[in-house]
Image 1 (cartoon, rainbow over the protein chains, first blue to last red):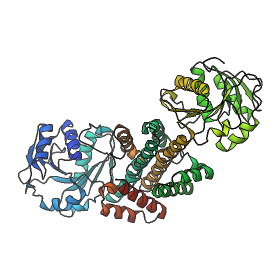
Image 2 (cartoon, chains in turn brown, orange):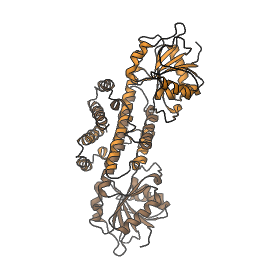
Image 3 (cartoon, helix red, strand yellow):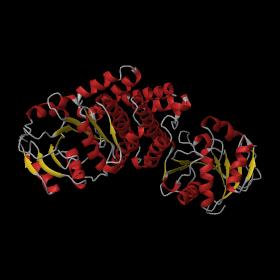
Image 4 (tube, rainbow over the protein chains, first blue to last red):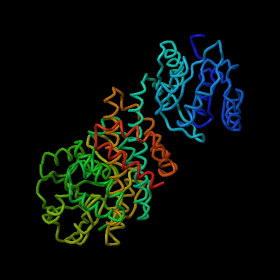
Length: 262
Length: 262
C-alpha cells in the first residue's frame, strides 16, 4: 500500500458520510463505492460526488479502496461489521466515525481497524467547513494510525489522537456543552415566547457567553444570581417557575451546582 | 425639557455605567456627573470620558442632567433611590439598568421614572458593540417613554418596550440560556481536562449549536442520545459519571427533560 490513502469507500450515505466523502474528494481522494441499505441514498451521494459505485450489498471483495469508512447509526454498527466482505489480498483499513463506540467494535474482528471521528454536527442541507472541525483518530497499528492521521490532516487543521476511553469522555462533555445547552436554549425560547418576546433577544448575550468561555474560561466567566448567591432573585425566579415543576427542579439543581462548583 | 435627551448623569461607575456612558457620549450626549461611593471609580470613568464631575455624594440638586442613570448592584438600589437629591425645578428622568428589579422601585418615590436595561454582559476591559445588544425600555409616563426610546435607538438597533413582568421572564430565560449553559461548558471543560483533552475541541460544535438554534430553532435542532432515546449510551454515560453524583443527577434530569419536551 502507498504511504497515502487515495481511494476510499463509504458504508453509509447519511449526514456524516455526505460531508466526509466530499471533504476527502477535495483532499485528492477518489471515492470508489458508496453502500447504503437503501440504494437511492447511495446513488444520491455518488451523484453529488460524481464518482463511485452505488451499492446495497456489503460485498467489498472486489473493491480497490484503501480505506472503508463505516458511517452508520451506532446500533447498526456491530452487525454491519460482521457482514462486511473484504478483499482477500489487499487489506483496506476499516474505520467507524462514531464518538460513542469503542475501537474494539471493529478491531475485534478485523486486522486493520480504526476510528475516524469528526467532532461536528452535520446536516445534509448545510455546507460546513470541516477544516475548523476537530478530527479524532484512533488505531492500534502504528502504520494505520499514521495513514489515518495523514488523511485527517488533509481535511482538518485540528487533528488529535484520542483513545476509546477519552473519546467517551469527550462525548459526555459534548452532551453537556451542546445537547444540554441546546435544551436550555429551548426552555429559554419557550419562556420568552409565552410573554410575546422573541428568542433573538438573547442572541448577542449567548454569543458573548460562548466567546468569553473560550477566550478566558467558563468558570472564570460565570455570572448570574447563582454565583452571586442572590437568594432573593433565586427565590423570585423559582416562584415564577411554579407552573412547571420540571423547569423549577432544573433551575434549583443548576443553581446549587454552580454554587458548589465556585 | 427638549424633545431629546442630551445631558446624562450616572450613579454608579461599574461595568454597565462604564459602557453605557461611552455609548451615550458617542450618540451625542454630554455626561454631566458620575457618582460612585468610591470617588476613585467615578474619577476613572470621568477621565475615560474626558467629561463630567466625579462625586461621592448623592446630591444632584444642582445637576443640569435630563436623565440620571442608576447603575448599581440590585441590593443597593432601594436605599440609593431614597437618598437621591434631585433639582427642585427641572425634573430629570431617573432610570435603573437592572434586568431583575421592577420599575416600581423607582417610580414609587419619583415622578419621572424608568428602566433602561441593556441586555448584555459587560466587563470594563472589553470593548463591546452595543448597537447589536437589545435595549429594553420601561416607563409609566408616555413622554418619558418616548424620550428613553429615542435615546435607546441612538445606541442600539434593537430597542423594545418591556414591562417589569416580562423583564422578569426575560431574566429567567437569560439565566437558563447563558448562566446555566456557561456552567455546562465549565462541566464539559472539567471532564475534558481530566483526560488531558483541550476544551477548545468543543468550540466548533458549540458555535454550530448556537448558529442552528437561531437559524432554525433549538427544539428542532436538538441532537444527542437523549432525543434519540439511546438508553444504552445514556446508561454508559451515567456509569462513567458515577464518581460525581451531582453531574450524574444533572445528566439524568436534563436527559429526561429533553425527552419530555420532545
